Image (tube, rainbow, N blue to C red):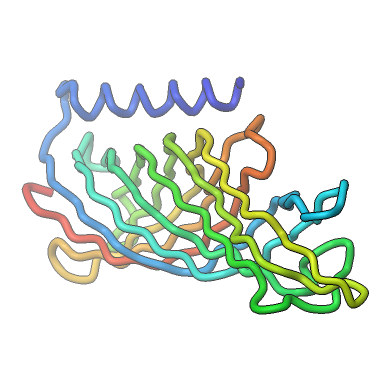
Length: 221
């Protein structure tokens, strides 16, 4: 709860500064899209038909993608502030070796999984280091974890794994850098923690995405 409160306060301060005026100067609209690779850090317990104990799935890494739109405002010659809405999806790959207790095989196909997240995000950019602008980010929103149901074969007997679908409060925390390519267009690189917050519901997943993206500014930045 303390982590959620701290993130909420940080994001609220960023919104007040961005929308409240003050000494802030030029403002621009920013759109961005990108993708990369995400590493999950959470195991998922899945109900098994005909068994009292659930199966434990340790999802593997997979591709991720995101789109975002928001506002950027120059605070000083050295700092810019951004607030945006980000939608993202991350694939959770599951093989027969990722299911415990161990199984012989997945009968048709092993279960696929997804983490979808929608968040309101604040960014603080350091603009005094030339063409490369490092930034820090924090966001709050909602995250949905889905693991598909499938049939598995263990010891010559087929069992049905139930579908798992969990929606909970989520967010992003991380850092990145933007490299200015031409006027208005930048290449971005990020590493962050994405997914459910501490104290989340059972089976809510947290991941570590590493992404590259392209961002374009419209307006006075």
